[in-house]
Image (cartoon, rainbow, N blue to C red; front, side):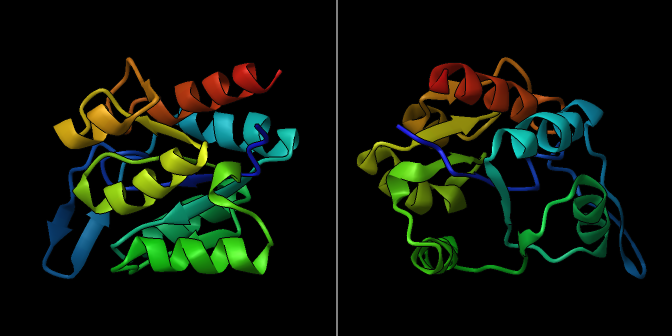
Length: 160
């Protein structure tokens, strides 16, 4: 099995899932430095492409992705599977080439197709029950607290 893409949800996976709102909208998001280091210094050099696939839209996320070197960023996505299909078709890859980490029911449609094709599914320890039941890997960490880094290390260990 060769993983070519790591698809990541954001809120509840790369963040703790809390949305800090002020009068003008979202004020901030907290990202774990270990996740960032795992993406920038481990995942990308290994040849796996990081992909952000999220239902919300946030300039804060755009800034973080720029810092980490993530160029495949899809925000405001209502039906995640449609966007994932376009990515894979464009790059002539299959679901078996994908690892996906998410935390809630809006991730399940992608997760199910990926899992059935032989790809890898991960989630934070505090993910929704249905997601934990689908996962091949459940991090010992909560979303926004290094869960993505643990999944990256697990994927790379399996691919050795």
